[in-house]
Image (cartoon, rainbow, N blue to C red; front, side, top):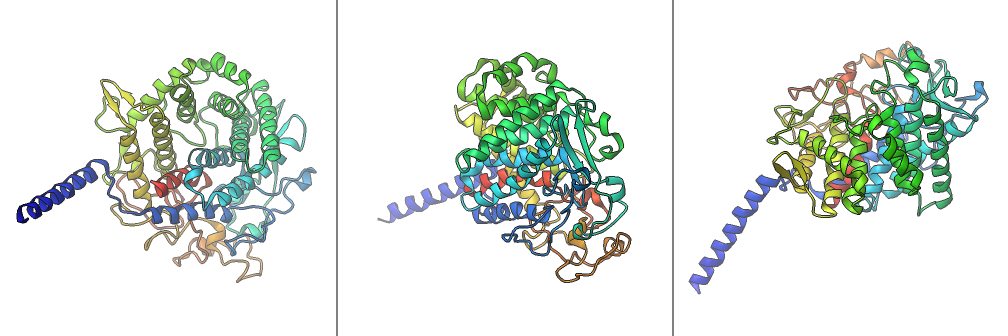
Length: 497
């Protein structure tokens, strides 16, 4: 009897030690629970309500916001009401808005089954953008409206969107002044969203896909970069540094996935080489779609063994291997605390997009028991998941400063967010107009933001893991729609796993 008890105790201890080793090897011991990830997921979607432009619905949950931009487009005789402000200002920039929409949709496509309680809110966040993008794409034949608001004038003011009195200039691309980058990204957004709404709203889904095809045809037929056509109103804010080839291949890839129309497969096959299929590129952002396109197209090879897409699997491996310490092609930079680091301005946008691609590629690899080839070594899907988890946990507060970089999540998070509406007293508590120049007292104030922009992920810490909770340091303290979008998918995954 005593011997049995001793061996049972010994077995229990061995299992505990193995669990600890497994935990250390795989990072499966977590600083956060499924409930924590689910809380962060709900907040990451709620953030979009703070970025809304237009007439707010009765279901609006961030009630410190009010209606804004209700006459957008009217001086040009078009209805451009709605959509999102990109970050902490009051401009509606088409390129980042479309990219945000594509990634929100991709998050739902891959991980929607892991967010049952939030799927309605996620669809609403996508639809707030696609309703606007549909208007921008269909208001005038041969034209895509790509921006509302003069950023140079807007940035000279610090005022609530509800008080906005800066010029609401409208900017467009056309056959004569093309913008293949912004148009193809808009096509990608509409196509990806058509997959999201396929079952819940089939007629809306059809409209999205049909419009995506028309906008893509426009992007492909009249080639040129919107930066050349619109210059100082989009540069340096959202200049298309990578050109437009990456967006054309990305847009075609999304329409291919949404439609299974053979002509888009043919387009990818005949244009892939000239549009970056053979480039190894190591970042994925509102500007550069190459890494995302590789991962997206690798799905057809991994799940359907479509030979034409083996190239994309190979280059996806190259991208993934560049992120994995210890592999022969490792070249990413990490902070001492383990955060992926790409640039000093709004670095967390690269962290969230990278974590999403790691998880999505892991999902595709797992579908056929595959792995990533890194020279002579192989990297498993589990390894990708553990690296993604490290990045997600860092953002949520498992980092050297013990600060969550998601506003409203955890016990300690940034209080001085670079965001006009959040930093100025709400129209609910201060209904009187606050002028362009009078708002600057709130930008420079040492007080915390009066309105909590729940769910916003900020630019984040520097390459030494330090963070200045300073409203005037926009590189670190400004949120953006495209930082959150891929994080929605990552949080959904970890809330269920």
